[in-house]
Structures are given as structure tokens and as C-alpha cells.
Image 1 (cartoon, rainbow, N blue to C red):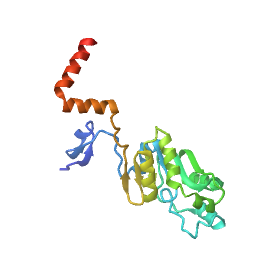
Image 2 (image 1 turned 120 degrees about the horizontal axis):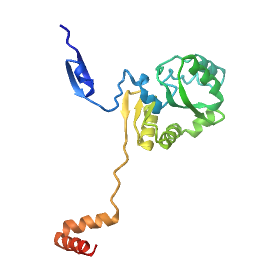
Image 3 (image 1 turned 60 degrees about the vertical axis):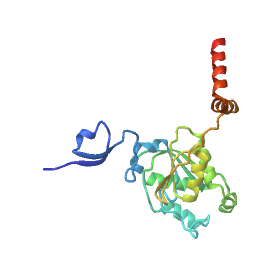
Image 4 (image 1 turned 135 degrees about the vertical axis):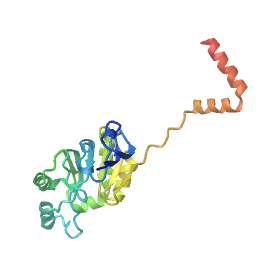
Length: 212
């Protein structure tokens, strides 16, 4: 006799197995299906360190060695689902090599955002990799996930966007929500009076109701 078990099921699918641990009906993304999930249609992905192995310092010479790397980058995680936006700190002048590699591995995407700077030296001086990615992610309300290679940049993206970021380097989800809004001065005064002078507050309430 076979017994079928699933760790997580939906309310609709729970009757398809004999045993389960938890019911979750919301959108669920797991490590094993992250790059094959429909959520990628509303996601931003980094390229180096996510889709392919990162270049080494010596490889990234902003010249022929780097071009050879772009042409022959070793695949890391190749998505099978279409992606909303690929956003990279690769320089715009390397767009053609990047597009050719993506086509070679059948990576489907709607947008490819690259950095408009003339050289690697200028990019290193600029040094706002995380901020650059975060601003794009934050500005598009339809985007609900960012997959980033660098832990440092992932923290920056999460802190600025206040939206979920998955870091491939550490295999963790980073989410820094907006701090709760502070009540207005009027509401704070109202709360103070109600707590400190309940009788007086009640009379004010009665007078307001009688008037309106």
C-alpha cells in the first residue's frame, strides 16, 4: 500500500494526498522552483552571480578578456519562466554580448537594464550598485521580488525598496518593511486626553454628537 505525503498543500489539493503538514493557499516559492515559477514575470533579476558565475577580478579587465568571459560565461541558474526585468551593473557597451548569451541559453525577459557609464574605472568610482538597482525596483509597483547575487547589495535593495529580495549568495530572503506611520499630532493629543482625562474626553464626545 502506498501512502502519499506532501509537506505543504493548498486547500483545494489537500484531498489528493494522505498526509500533509501545512496548508498554504498564498503564492508559494521554494528554493527548488524559484527559477521556474510564474512570479518571475513580476521580478527583477541580477545577471552575474545569478544567471551565470561571477567574473573574477582578473577576468573583468574591461577589454578582450572580459568580452571572452561575456561570450562564454558559465551558466549558474537558468530560468525557464519569463522574467520581467534583468538589471545589471554591466556597462551598456556590452549589451550585444549579453543579449547573445541570453539568447544562447533561451532566457526570456521583457527588459534589460544596463549601466550607462563609459568604463569599469568610472563604475568603480560611482559605486552605487545597490542603490541603482533598488530605485528601479522601488519605482515599479508591479514588481514584487528581486533576486540578487551579492549580500551587501541585497541589503541595500531591501532597505531602499522595502520589498522582498532573495540573496543567492546566502540563500536567504531579506525584507525590510516600511516603519509604521506615526499618528498625526491631533490623534496623539486626542489619545492623550482620552487616557489622562477620560471624564473630560467623554463630555467632549457627547457635546460633539449633540452638535452634529
